Length: 105
Image (cartoon, rainbow, N blue to C red; front, side, top):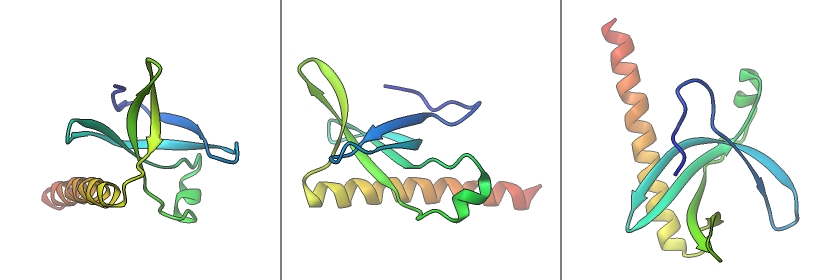
């Protein structure tokens, strides 16, 4: 399982069903319900491009296929909603902690 780097974004290039490649930045990795899940957002090289983005959170699940680990879409809607909400709660908690630390300084 990759670790989130403190020195720069962890980037993943994913290919969709139509064969289109897009680069995503890893926000978080979480173990839940016996699986490993990844939260990613579309990568933007310039900070101003982030503001123009769609704020799309992509949640993928690690699956093993023929002995190879792959990131895959979550097919079950209930699982997707549950895991997505868990990631959103974790991300919001992290931002709240950062805001509190900034106001204390």
